Length: 604
Image 1 (tube, helix red, strand yellow):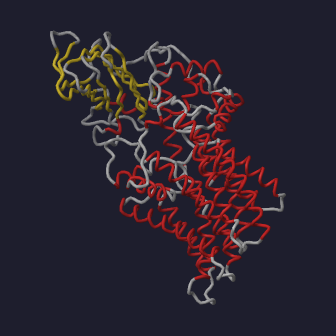
Image 2: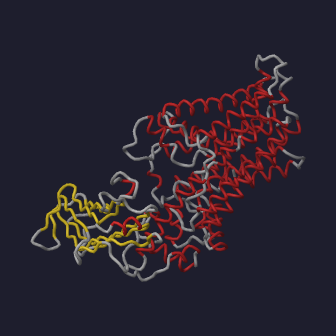
Image 3: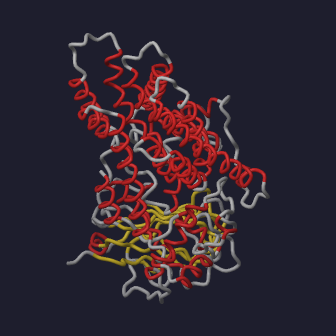
């Protein structure tokens, strides 16, 4: 699974910053290691560790997106796999149980987590890595107590300074370890290690939590993120969103919303029930005969459960109410939780739930002659079926679709570069103008700039449509558009359209990349939408269309639309239907030019 992610990323990845990654270029400090920049809060968090890694990637890799995400994916996911295996080896004595449990790390390796889009998304996984290292360093081996405390403090600092969620989960992990060190049935040497490691982690968590709280809530607000609405635990949205994250952690989901809700709540109930059962087993002194089996599982699972619970609570607090006004109701909030990667931490619990099953089996009323081994095989089979049915193994589709979307962004940037106009593309919607970010990236020699040179835009050798300069080779239909006094002025109805049906059948059947150019000046700010009909499609649809804003400037403006059509364009009665154009929400429009050209044709 890790190899599948790596190969898919290498095949479909695009060396182009995405969304939040543009911010560093726009501010002109993405390569900066200045203390003030690293510790400045943004988006309700302070992330000096991640920002420092981003700066080093910019300096050493030229900000190469493919190389940077390849390294972070391999290191972070590889480290988590290694840590899970080592901790399972410490806590689980039976080889079969350990191997079946480790197989349930597969959901952690599904697509749509922290890789494939933003470089900086993986910052949110760093605290989990550091905390698992601290747990492993505390529990495994015979290190000196002072070394365990110092290492726990250092790793807790790294976790707490990676993200705000890392600070509060570090605090909760330290408290959990200290609380469990009071269990008298645990062997004395292990209690001392837990107490030492817990103290170091707790101290780091308290310090970084106070620092994060000050930076994001008390210090002067620099980015307006405090105005984001919060959802509190007494609100139903908080719990529906949290349940959605739990359900999403085991794959994209079933087709039925009702079935998905049942699955999510059942999965959450299992995670909670195992935590309660292990806690009670280790707390009570009357079950000494099973306590050695439960102790080590509890010592790993309970801090991990607390960490994940705190993380999910923070995510629900900050994200459940941060939504469009149209998203209302329990079902809508539940489905909203399926859109982002914050489910990732939940996947760390699955191996430990499976590892606890044999012990729970022995504690049940099942006769001793009935072995747990065959039931582990059943658990493995059920896990495999769930992974298959919920799309966990489908890794390449996500990277391929994302790569296609990034290719559209590159075309958008290439077309606007050098025009002197503000550059606005879907991949950089957080910026009003992409030009300053491009200029800073160019000055740094960022790797992606080589794909975006400023070039002359040569006209095509042959226009398939060049209205009004030459007569159309086909038919133009004007719908709710009426010419005024023979000039470029048109009065427009509620849904004005132009439909072009070409008589050049062969040209459109063989066209694989079509460009449409529109030059117009609407009477009010609006948007233009162009449709094409690929071969095999029944008619015009939103899927095969592009929308771009059109401002009401004093002079006409141009808008370009590019369409990939691998099988060419549709034909009907020997003709090729090409374009349906809409300019919405205006009473009038000046239409100066409507052109179409084939930028790539199939070989004849």
